[in-house]
Amino acid sequence: MSVSFWMSRVERPRRPALDGDRDVDVCILGAGYTGLWTAYYLATADPALRIAVVEREHVGFGASGRNGGWAAAELAGMDRMLADPATRPGMVRTWREMTRAVVEMGEVAAAEGIDCGYARGGTVVAATRPAHVPYLQHSVATARDAGIGEEDVAWLDAAEAARHVTPSRLFGAMYTPHCAAVDPARLVLGLAVAVERRGVKIYEQTPGTPIPGGVQTPTGTIRAAKVVQAVEAYRTGLPRQRRSVIPVYSLMVMTEPLPAETWARIGLAARQTFSDGRHLIVYGQRTADDRMAFGGRGAPYHFGSAIEPAFDLDPPTFASIRRTLVDLFPALAGAAIEGEWGGPLAISRDWRPAITTDGDRIIAGSYVGNGVAAALLAGKTVRDLIRGDDTDLVHLPWVGHRARRWEPEPLRWVGVNLGRKLTESIDRAEDAGKKPKVRNAIFRRLPVG
Image 1: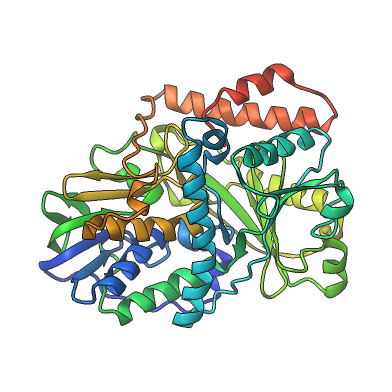
Image 2: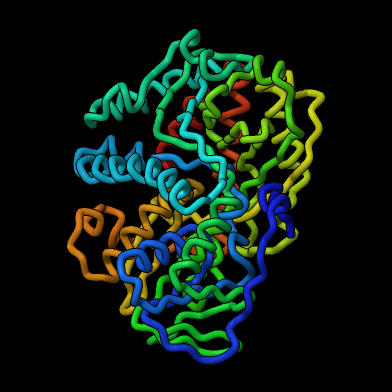
């Protein structure tokens, strides 16, 4: 098991496990962003509610304490839904709410005294190969056709892009101001303290299983009128949910603090988050203490949707991430790496997040790695669903959306890993200046992005 660099640098209070039966109004499975934002907004709206959060490990154990710290106004599948006239209006409404969520996160952090290094510098997605230019320009055009203005999403030429970031090759970039860099561990731990101040009970080291009318744990039963399931990739370990999502591993590295002259060569003066136009996702941010946090996909999917501590650390993937980082920013060739970690994220069959109801249970998540800000919006939405409030949020298209289940094994293992190999091969071809038209055509038919 890996501990993220973020989590290794903060004091984490230990909370007791459940020690008997309880009666509450709402029981939440999972003490990550989704569960804690739900608790926060419920407790704020109705201080009389009895709310319990049950966590198998500790607050922020999963993706909430391991991610790249992007609070982005982006949902997985957004490009596809903006491009489709049938889904465009709902996606635009969702996107507007996401932009508000990015701002609101900073407001809540300030109000609650959560020192998470929140910096709303936006996101720059660089075209570091000529082949990236049409992909990114198409995304900008799709947003524009949907009525999203240049002030929200813009194409920058190489000179304009270089004012944000200066990788070794730069042919332009897509830029949006609607993203904030955060320290994810400080955010989730601070949020836990904020909900406890409102009377919410958090039980750590308490694995829970949803049952009719509550949650069963090894040390007691919590009876609840409503259960919120917010366990992301770990959903695959719950009864009858093995094929609801797949756990895909994302890995990260953290450099030592970098001197001012190095940052002068790289950019990111406003702590913009950054990526580039490759198919196999990479992502990074300049931290509040001037480190480079950088991560990417590429680790294998494991048969049977297995999640094991050893899978957090995949040496070939770490080596690839380090090579990519230095390829993008040669000034980092001699920088020491002070942390390496990883963990699983959840991907539904159609690569779209969802908030669904199943009797007295609400299930929220499947963010495909874009969950930092989306979890805040999910928490507000689940609050309204539980309270029965007929708000704009409960009519967003991800509410009630149900993806079909993933294929059984071995089809799932073969398909997911072949898809990963396909994206890697497209990136290699484009790195070499080639145009893999057939492979790109196949990729565009996959339910990704």
